[in-house]
Every structure is written in structure tokens, then in C-alpha cells.
Length: 292
Ligand SMILES: NC(=O)c1ccc[n+]([C@@H]2O[C@H](COP(=O)([O-])OP(=O)(O)OC[C@H]3O[C@@H](n4cnc5c(N)ncnc54)[C@H](OP(=O)(O)O)[C@@H]3O)[C@@H](O)[C@H]2O)c1
Image 1 (cartoon, helix red, strand yellow):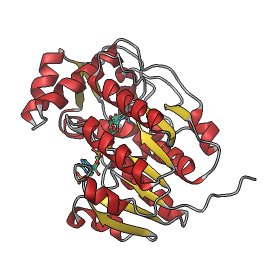
Image 2: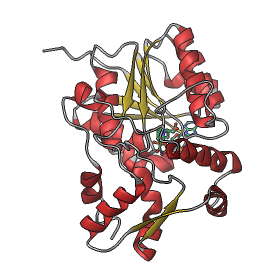
Image 3: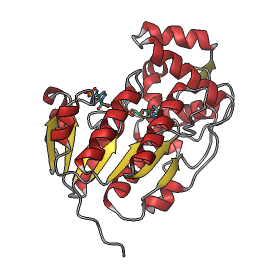
């Protein structure tokens, strides 16, 4: 049996998709943590978790990071993929280094690469490089497409029985965010993850057509996947308020999926957590009410 390290943990991104699940799982295990939030108003649920201590700050404000990192040994680093993400995350690494943080668990992305045509994959690789050069110990989590990203297609699935993207017929080993958070818990609290880079995928690679078939089977009504030209998807993203940089990044992401570059299946979730990665059918079953 490995012994748990006594943690002194800071989570960034704790109000978001992965961070809130990570906070919930830490709390359920009785592991206290501090969460950096930009506003207490958006963090009411988080504040109610046992073991949660909230600190107000911003990755754009180094002074606030100094306060947030006081006494912290292990930090989870995540922001959304905005045009500022690279700078924000670099700020965090610089302050963490000065504050005496020992270990950073960085939420990166599957196929992160400094030379990728996908801007998200380039910035994640640049932050990984900065962390490697900082001398801090690290674990990099590189998840593939989140299954929960398909919640973004909820309205067309509910209202039209269709969802639209530009994945072609490429297979993608999408991953459930609950499994990503479970790996983050291990990397933050247990020994054995220093210097590791984990590709985090589901147990199978499915086309969007196969995902649609699972929606149809489990929801008991037809759901179709419609492949659209990238320009249509871009327009749709802009029309619902995505900044251009982000919309273009998502188009690049989908082109990377369509080239079949996100189809590899990794066993890291099983190896790190001791439990098999959730499959797509389980995801749809667990979220069936949301899609109904
Ligand atoms: N979606 C996918 O399929 C996918 C796949 C692989 C990897 N990823 C990676 O996953 C990451 C996004 O994870 P997610 O979906 O959990 O994110 P999310 O739900 O969009 O949440 C982003 C979090 O970052 C916080 N944040 C943003 N700017 C900040 C700042 N200046 N200072 C402090 N906190 C800040 C937000 O806080 P507020 O509540 O204050 O806004 C929020 O808690 C990205 O790096 C993306 O590349 C995504």
C-alpha cells in the first residue's frame, strides 16, 4: 500500500467543468483544498463543499497569486482556452516557483505540441515547457475531447434530434471528465506521478455517427450527426458569442479530430485510478435526463 502524502493543495479553474468535479472528488475523500476563484458569487456551491477554503484572486494578478499560494505545496493549473490562457498560466508558474510550490498538476490537452497547427495544442505545449524549465516537479494531464463537451450540443439534440460539427467520420477516443478529475486527485495526493505525462482517453474511439447511434439507443429516439463545413461551424460559434480567437481554435481542434489524430486509446486512467475509463454509453446514460 502506498501512503497518502499530507496535502496542501490549491486548485485553479475550480468553478469550471473539470475543476468543480476535482473539488467534489477531493471533498468526498476528506482531502482539504484551497480554491482560487475570481468571484465568491460564482463559487457558492464550491464554498459548501467540506474541506474547501476559497481565496479570491486572478491569474492576471500576481499579487493575488502570492496570497493564494502561501503555504501551498501542490497546485492544479487550469484555465479555459482563451487568447490570454498562455500568459495567465505562465504567470501562475512564475509565482508558484517563487512561492516554493513543489508540484504542479497541469491540465493540458491530448497531442499538445509546440509545432501543432492547433493553437490550443501549441499554448499547452508552451506552458508544459515553461513548467519543465522551472525546475518544479510536475504531472501533465493530456485529455482528449471531453464527452461532456457534447453537452454543448444539448439544444439541437433535444429540439431537432441532430447535432452538427466538422469531425467527418474520424474516430475520437473522447474521455469523461469524471475520470480526468479522478486522475488529478491521484496526481495531487499520491506519490508516483512526478514527471509523468498522461494521455487521458476513453476506452474506445468512436466516430460522431457512432456517438449519435448511442444517443439514439439510450434516449429512445433518433439522433443524427450532421457533418457541416468548418465555415458553418465557425459562424455558429460566433453567433453564440465565442470570441474569434476561440472559434478559430475550435475549428482547428475539429480539423485535428477529422484528420484522425485523436483516435489513440490510452490505458492511463485504469493504471492511475485502478478503475476502467467510462465509455460513451455510460456517459449518455448518466446524462440522459439532460438530453431529454
Ligand atoms: N473541452 C474539451 O473537450 C477539452 C479537451 C481537452 C482539453 N481541454 C482543456 O480543458 C481546459 C478547460 O477546462 P474546463 O472545461 O474545465 O474549463 P472551464 O469550464 O471553461 O473553466 C475555466 C476555469 O478557469 C477559470 N479562469 C479563467 N480565467 C481565469 C483567470 N484569469 N484567473 C483565474 N481563473 C480563471 C474560470 O473561472 P471563472 O469561473 O471565474 O470564469 C473557470 O473556473 C482548457 O485548457 C482546454 O484546452 C478541453
